[in-house]
Image (tube, rainbow, N blue to C red):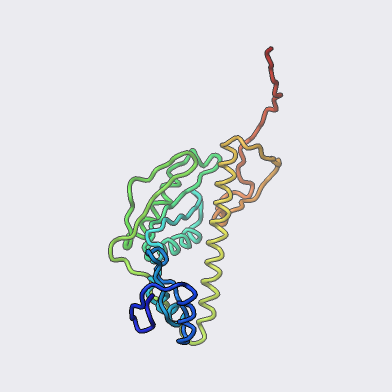
Length: 241
């Protein structure tokens, strides 16, 4: 056991060590439980907790985390600009960004539209990023990976002018909400399509449908839906004696 003044007190019975600490107005702290015998120290418990928390290193923020942004081949310039600004924020924070252009219906016959979208984004971010590898199309998705250039720094916090701070915050909040809605809708769409490809039965309602994802303003409100059909079969079990 170690005293409050770092003096070695030798090996004591637990009850004797507790009694000694109480008589001195301190607590008995187990500092090395795996030692043989275990090591205790007489000290103030509050001070012990403070020193322990001070010496504990804060975990580093997740750097180089992969971010993803989604869009359609016919996403309009306004919504694409929102994607560019959010991608820039991710890149300046040290993250890579995977840009996914999701095709649907007859859009798959025009891959050049998706490539134009991805190249427009990479061009807008050219000063702070570079494209890793070629643009790749697999199934309904065309993907581009962009990474931050060395030395890229986070965007400085904007200096709020008198009377304009609230308006600026509201505009940023609206843009963030638009971005979140756009990505959520596209992620949902990607999940639905994955379910179809996996053979999941879904109810299909005939008639016109409106585009769900923000960024599809340029697409016909009628949209394009693939005809889905499912054959119902009967399961039979054969048993042999």
